[in-house]
Image (cartoon, rainbow, N blue to C red):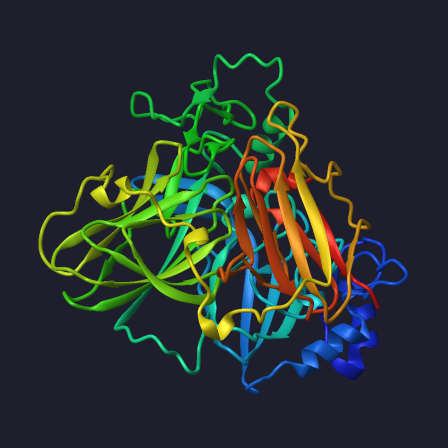
Length: 523
């Protein structure tokens, strides 16, 4: 199949780039943003966006990458192989590593049977490169490609994934590590750890089929064949005990609860939980020497699962969350909602140690191993004692002084009520399901206060594109925050990156059901 490439360029070539992007992408209406901004709003490819990009400090270095989204057969280890979609033939996709100030020039070739894009989760980048189809760009058609090019401003642990349907709950994700040219931490080795819950290609299941099942809701349903708590029965986990069928067995989860998450832990009974693409039967092993100081970068790429993470026999020192530094805190375990990232330092002991990620409330675990010496590997279902303590969450952290927001009264408050229920599966923001022409207006230069009010019986990891917000009381800088049932959380950010930016729940199925909306900069 012929692949057509169109380049989106900066500055003076922006108007020419607009027509080129349209030629290389899908048939959505509007400009390169997929939908033209309503009158009075900054367009994703507007002059304000170009000016903000030009003002970002840059090193002049360009990191060039080519990425292919394609169907692939993936080996999850332990005799488990699945047909899925991935970046190349690896799970996770190959790590992309740049230095803050570099320009990333990445071409995505779409070899999938449906349109796609790439969203750069956590990055404050130019709006027309954010990868939200129908909002900031047109989706990339099958057989076409798209050139993403932008300055990478902030060091930290980030990742990339599609923003099209349920594609992220396949194998389409990869870590993006932005190194600090003035790195203040001292460590001997670095371990990038990507956590995931896996359903695609198992007994005929697909994320689209899972969404179709969930969308029917629970009200009035016969739950006799459903999975109650994610338990593995008889060594075979088919998610609900029903026989495989087109779209797979039932994957609806009932009875999974977590006090840490405020009640209901999740909607989906996944047959596998992975660390760096491997099941606990054949875990990845990271090797080091006793006494090595290891920086572990943790990323939750899951679709519906919070993970409680611990390294057996070790305490972890938390240094960053969502890419930004925090005042260091020691902990036995920590909790990551979908989309969240944490960096920790550990001083390696002598032996073989389990890095265990407990699927919070779902009674299953993912596993990797740290080996610094001899000895037998622990069993695949090992539960280190460190998991027994209450996990650290973002509310216990304080932002490092170098990234703390200055004290300032908010110029604008945007209240976002999280609404909906499992019974009807009608997740929404302020009672309205997502429509790209909905806007909550802000203006450049404002201090904006987001007030998340969770009116549902479910927890939601809420993610803001293109910015980081500060949690209250000198709390950490974040782009994704867990909002528990009945909770009200205020988060402040400075409106310093013009364009149209999504806010959504990072539960893939909640977002696709409608729990998404848009912040729009007034022009």
